[in-house]
Image (tube, rainbow, N blue to C red; front, side, top):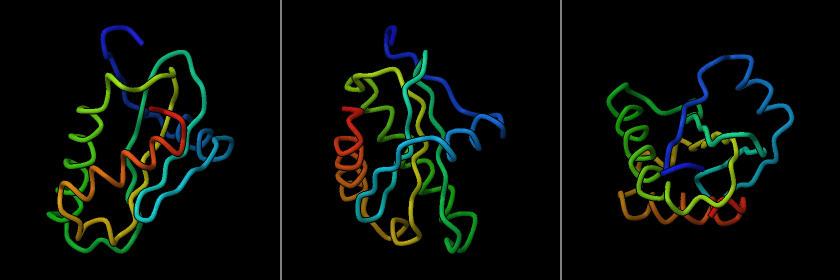
Length: 110
């Protein structure tokens, strides 16, 4: 990875391919589906059940913030999707950061 540059997985075909063929690692409230790739790219997905756009967007922003803090630590060039369960919306920022860091370590990304 060059200078911490990271991209987003946007195309539906790319996301579906990753969901079908990627390796899955889960923590209590966060899951990561990943596979090696030429560059580091990610997407954030939320499980159904998080009521209200404000809560969903807040969780998405928090997850993205934690990812941006940890971007320099990512070892491999890989594509990954971070999936949060509905219970993750109730976590504080520190707890969410701990959960995501644990999931990334379990996946071998950091």
